Length: 117
Image (tube, rainbow, N blue to C red; front, side, top):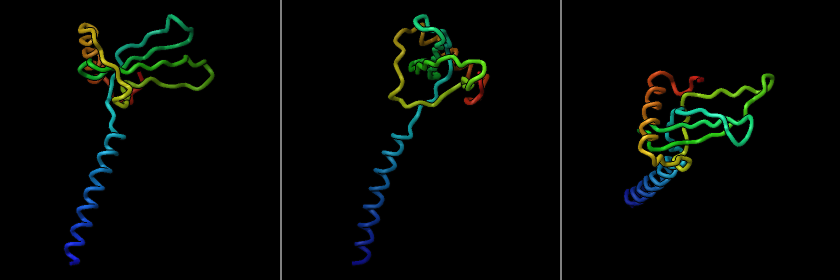
């Protein structure tokens, strides 16, 4: 009787762990994207637009950042960032996809993800 009860408890625990792990994996899942483009905003002054893309160039992450003054907080732009898949857009244009893939591969070859660029 103890063996059956223990087995049921182990099965239930294994099931709970599997469910918890799946949820944790989904919550912790990120995609590494590499800096492929840095431009200044035409619409607003002092805004830099950073575009990061996956190595295949098919997905991208866009980040806008205000320029910092010379005396205030300095934020480095890193070669890569890890983002949630829900924050990625799809690159529809084949030429842009190829350009992003080439630049992402170049960055990945030249830099470590946390290197400032």
